[in-house]
Length: 169
Image (tube, rainbow, N blue to C red; front, side, top):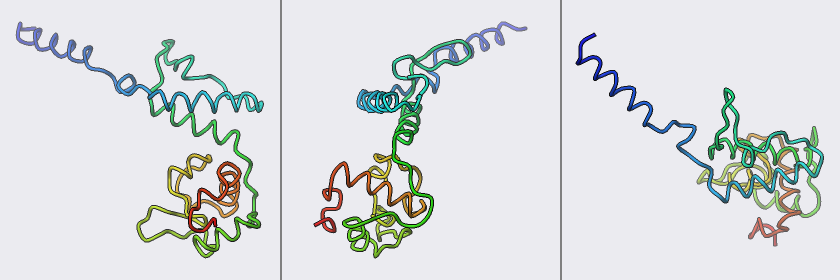
């Protein structure tokens, strides 16, 4: 091997060793960690057996332990929230009373409704952040109507009509 190739190989190896890996490049923000720890405690208290706490104990891979990335914490947070969310009904609409009125006002009761901007979706016109805050994943307008009813009921129990400032009056 020539000197030039040896130097090039050494430079390549040192560049690889010096570069941060994707797994270590994105540590979880403190607010995300707080949300995760709260959801973990709730799941544990509910007896849902949430498994390893990746914020407190880290992530194990190939016998090594490292801090969890923001993406890993976010994905695990969604799982924890779904573990403690009320189970959606299997068929039909389960909304009642005020929620029926809210759905009629928001979307005409259409579970696949999408507003003109594309921001508000589904029977209760959830935005993505609110949908995820009650354990929803994916597109609210693509979720079964019963799941939308259950998520809306959960949101209603948390915030009352505040989540629907126009139709909740």
